Length: 97
Image 1 (cartoon, rainbow, N blue to C red):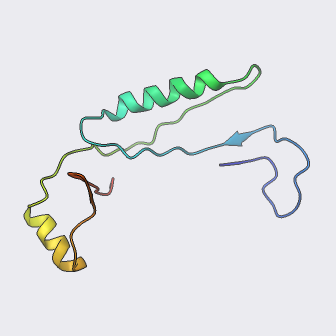
Image 2: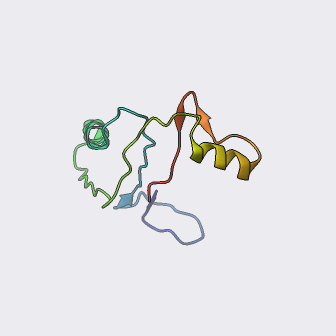
């Protein structure tokens, strides 16, 4: 989140412009576009009079998925890390790109 005067020192005014970056970690069966639309609608619902909002979608996203725990990739990750891959219930994380 950034906006207005960003240099070191005291900030004594409310900035005219502010920015924020929002990231969501999805789980299997969530549609990235639907999550984006829901988040945008929620944020727009919070908008105060006189405030202008703009949204810019990144050019990429990763589809969420379920990955069985016992796969060659997870066994290899466990061997490299000397412990199992990070899994929350049966959901596993992978990088977006």
